[in-house]
Image (cartoon, rainbow, N blue to C red; front, side, top):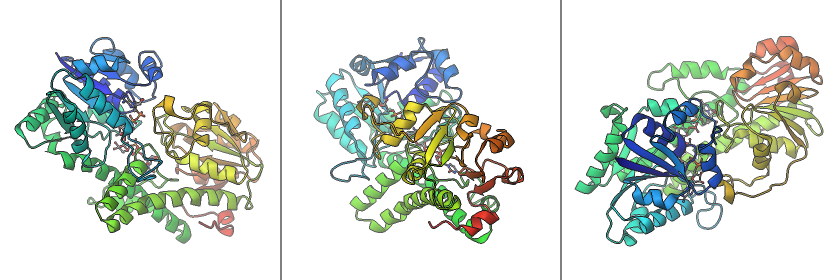
Length: 480
Ligand SMILES: NC(=O)C1=CN([C@@H]2O[C@H](COP(=O)(O)OP(=O)(O)OC[C@H]3O[C@@H](n4cnc5c(N)ncnc54)[C@H](O)[C@@H]3O)[C@@H](O)[C@H]2O)C=CC1
Ligand SMILES: O=C(O)[C@H]1O[C@H](OP(=O)(O)OP(=O)(O)OC[C@H]2O[C@@H](n3ccc(=O)[nH]c3=O)[C@H](O)[C@@H]2O)[C@H](O)[C@@H](O)[C@@H]1O
């Protein structure tokens, strides 16, 4: 029986391996991690991540051909194929700080593999890494190899959170990059055979190593660029009276552009877009391509602009101060159907409002108070490390309260900021909410989820990203 071991039981390692186990009953899959609590959670009834459909997949295979373990060295030494799906955070210190990828976890994984391997292995890059990382990994493995043959493959993951299981069941494509040697090509075919259990062959693309590594960074950069493009347009829409939903619909109807990923928002979040673009920028700079670097940097700048523009709009609409005013924040996760808060725009918006001395009451159906307090206390990029290596007991922010009830969060509030597009926010009883709030009562919709006309009829002053401004907001122009 072929044995797969995956290093890293996170948002990628867990769901990806669960689906491989489900679709390949003839393969044994073991997911290992240096964080014991994560493995304990994978072995419990409460999985460490919330992802629709994941529980069912895990329940079907766990204990049969899917296992979660802390015994890293044993499973690595026994495996034929080793996926490495560990953190690749942005460096916070030293050379390339604030841009370059920190490959500490990857390097230590590679050294450990070289130390414990007793038979030939295929080592698969599942983490998103800088182009040419495979070359460095190869050097680490071969210099410590004791004669064992390692083949490195790049197999980047394209799943999106909230739809991970669907994306893994029906991927647009699976990408496998390998060395153009007979051994390299044999390894590519071995991995291809795993995916061919459920993915049509013509959707399994094979390339050289560097193309596969770079395609992942490029795909995320293109996706984020679409959001920054529509968000840049949203500012112009507000200034001119155009409606960003109508503009993106009209633009997306062009079959060359397509309708997806054109929703204006308070900004993109998530663990990867910013990190991967910064990494791309750094690689361009290192390759003497400052013009290309600056081009991609702009995607991040517009995203930061969009978040600060939103905060400015909130503050300026409310008589230029939110000091001691209760602001309800609905949604904290970076998108709906996930409890993940990494790089969520809600963090920057909350920090901006706190900077203006607001009191914030937060409700998100999937995010705990502990997580929110950690997020608001943590420095930029510190979140992307194994849990036990993150700051232990961050100071809690007193002006922030967290509740499990949207009505409690909005009671007595002066304004509501919608930060995540949870479906339930569309069907809240806004009349009841309005009656319980201070007046004038404001709604700032960072995701364009509410029916602004209906809310205006109730009496709210409503701001929706990229939509024509109502009279109140026009009289109080926000300075970006
Ligand atoms: N989150 C996402 O949607 C996607 C993430 N990626 C990439 O996948 C990689 C992992 O991302 P996530 O799963 O989101 O991160 P994560 O933080 O959820 O999981 C990473 C796990 O690796 C573990 N780990 C770190 N060093 C280790 C080692 N030496 N041995 C064993 N375990 C170790 C950590 O404890 C952690 O549980 C990153 O490179 C990311 O850019 C790629 C596509 C999608
Ligand atoms: O490398 C990764 O980590 C993954 O990054 C993204 O997936 P993810 O971050 O999970 O979620 P997305 O659906 O891409 O959303 C990212 C952010 O953009 C925002 N967004 C998305 C689409 C849109 O039209 N507008 C918009 O503001 C979302 O609200 C969210 O904050 C990519 O979609 C995946 O293909 C990729 O594998």
